[in-house]
Length: 203
Image 1: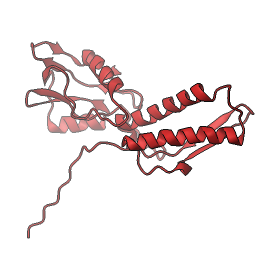
Image 2: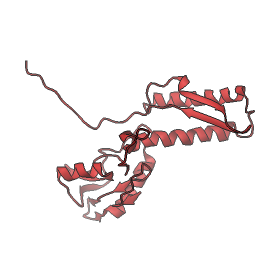
Image 3: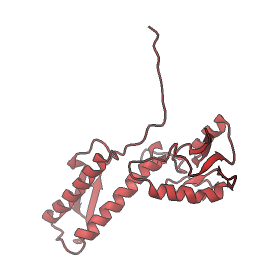
Image 4: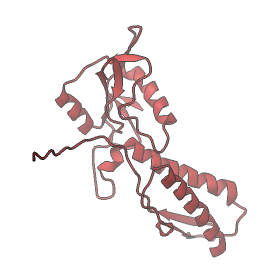
């Protein structure tokens, strides 16, 4: 988490402004970083912080115009907006602004990143708890490992964190060395509704 620092990296959140609390205390952007860090750490893999209210805040310390808010999102800035006596997160995004075939605009979403980070951590935890040094690196052992990863992916899908998962999306093979195991997983993370497009037909 950083304050007012362009980073162009999906692992860094760039906080742009702060909030005003109920008692009049002004929490500037550099101090609001702590709230963003806590809220991000507490968010589940199927949650976005978009439109989340800052606890105890009634407004933002710096207001922006609509065009300035739009520019902030394009610049990868995590910004608060004031509405109806609350300070809310405009968009739960990180600082990524450069996109490639391998890394699309989807990677700007912190919810998507939570899914990918959560998966990496959970896979490592399963390996360390049940396989590291105890299971033979044979086809049988790797299939057992794959079975646990398929079960994990099904949990992610049941939580609405990913979609369209099938067991063939996970491959577990021997790596270069006899003790090496390589996992390839094709996941399709879900994201939250944020933009509404409406077409009204007059009959």
